[in-house]
Image 1 (cartoon, rainbow, N blue to C red):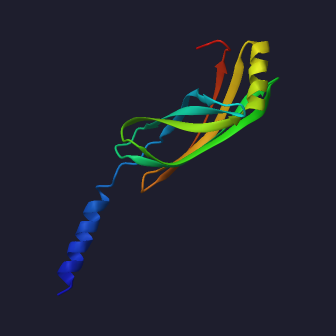
Image 2 (image 1 turned 90 degrees about the vertical axis):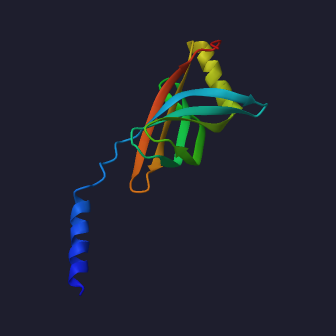
Image 3 (image 1 turned 120 degrees about the horizontal axis):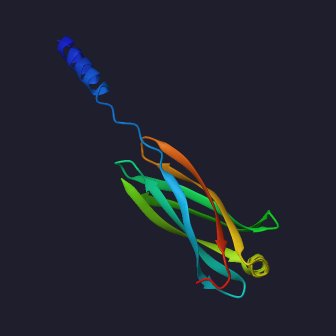
Amino acid sequence: MWRPAVILLTAALLCSAGCAVPPLKDPTVTVDGIGIENVTWGSTDLSLRLIIDNPNPVGATLTRVWFDVHFLESGQAVYLAHGEQEGIEIRPDGETAVSIPVTVDNPPLVQAFLRGLQDGAIVLRVNGSGTLDYGIATFEVPFNRTIEVRPGQG
């Protein structure tokens, strides 16, 4: 009585094993730029623009993305700010643009600006990582970029 059900279940399992889902490809996260959103006496609100490229036919959730922003002074990285965000939906088969706010205290930003006036450019470095969750697999995707900003550019 149970024998036909066991044979049918075994056959179904064997057939589905040959029809496996193709492996997921590695997504990428790149820094597209930094914009100034608001300036007050004590701080400046920036917006870090990221591009998440998802080459897979299924969407994902960027469960967490974090980054640190530094400026380079005499070859040394000087900390400016930390940014973080969670729960961003990522579209399948393409790029998703994301803007993440970060607030910078003005004293180190003014220091970077003065260094930029002296050197002719402010060099910012962004280092971070994002966690993309596909439901069946999770990818940790590090990213970094060095951006040169010239005072007076606009």
